[in-house]
Length: 276
Image 1 (cartoon, rainbow, N blue to C red):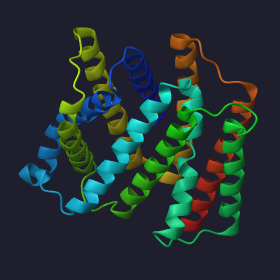
Image 2 (cartoon, rainbow, N blue to C red; image 1 turned 60 degrees about the vertical axis):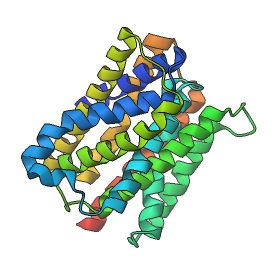
Image 3 (cartoon, rainbow, N blue to C red; image 1 turned 90 degrees about the horizontal axis):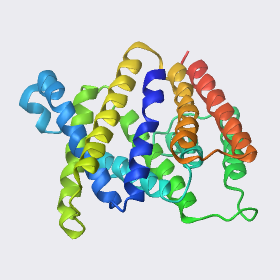
Image 4 (cartoon, rainbow, N blue to C red; image 1 turned 180 degrees about the vertical axis):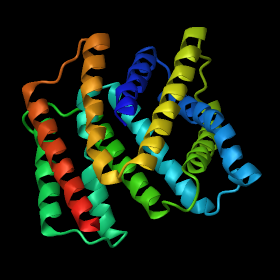
């Protein structure tokens, strides 16, 4: 899990560089889906053969793909307006979204302590955004939308957990996303140069490797133990943002992130105790 969190921010670096070069974000997300599907194809076929090409619940998988790649698109859009660490800090509203939707949609019991942790996490988000105190640009709303979309995607994933091999689910989601975005490509296709193709391939490889590592992590460890480790991603995101773009979060962002991480860890601990 720690290795995955260390390499995943490199996706954000590549997406931000491509965006600065004028590459349409839809092409970047399309490449993420296509190369993700190609890399997981051998594992999916090995697990289920040709049945991997036939999702058992096509509408459900279509919804998951739309949510996942909407989250990706919105986050890459946010990177065009915000430093990587700031966008990721706002994006980490998704654990709060998961708790809320789990109660509303999955009818999971959420006690007062976890609701209090959600409220505290929301305060952390407000500290990062500081509406009315600093200029809130469109990147803030893109990052928030991305966090909400990913939280919704993860709730749907939790709903079907165990229904199929994790690698097969990843392949099916990437394939559906790639197919949908390929339909829109003729509207804004822009031929990448060799360096851009290399970055697009690298983005897909790192994203897929990161998600394979996360899948392996969840095969060996409890979700409640691993979930807080996801926040270590912001450490590498800060390092990469400083190294490649000379961006550093201010003290208020650091405080807001600390509050968000604290609330998410508390939620994870409460879930673990509830399951026990």
